[in-house]
Image (cartoon, rainbow, N blue to C red; front, side, top):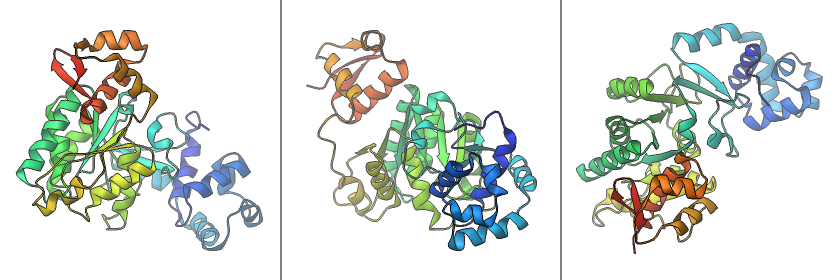
Length: 338
């Protein structure tokens, strides 16, 4: 399912995502019926009904085909200095593609690259303590220095500290937005957003002009976790949006980690609540851990012995460190904790 060689098909992916009530599931059904979305866009009402489109979604599509100027919609993306990635494009984030409700289309300012397959999300409260900000910054910087992309949500507090840590670590970071790619929320993070776009990417599924409405953020959060190998909660109260991200991560089969906080602070209650993983979450984790001992082993030796890519080995070692199963003793050498 690729249309990289047919730029015109992008127009129709964009068109369908601008129609209220047309979900990724409905788009897949249309693709199964018509083979491509250009045929589906021009299909008769009867054929659309036979493809399973009905009710308000069908009414919305019939109206939208008369009202939406697809070329103008594409031009708005270009004016925002952004690009569109669809599920049918090779450049779509592969981890995100695997989730059950992957966004059919992403708006991207900056660039998503192959190295971003090795990514960890760091999220937490907007009203962070100095401790939380320092921990978020330090962990993000160290992950970035090891080649791990840091993903967060551009919010004040923990998110912003994570992005800054990754940038200062000389690495990549991706911010997932709850609004259109043509604006920055909160506005005080405008300069940070520009740095992220230059050294990573700003990403959103919401169309040009979309405001940062409250109901957007749970959807934003499932993209944060969906693009990540695991989610690290640094500091979060009991009803924090970060816990929505953690819940989405668990549903997607991703790892969830938490940084312990002061048990007397409400801002730590949510992060202190997640139960840590009790076992390995992948065969790769089990393999790499089995290769470690109390004698330090160099990363290059682990890569050669495992036959895995450097990115996979580094990502796995990072996850083992976060689980307190491995320790970096310096000089790119790792050993078991006990």
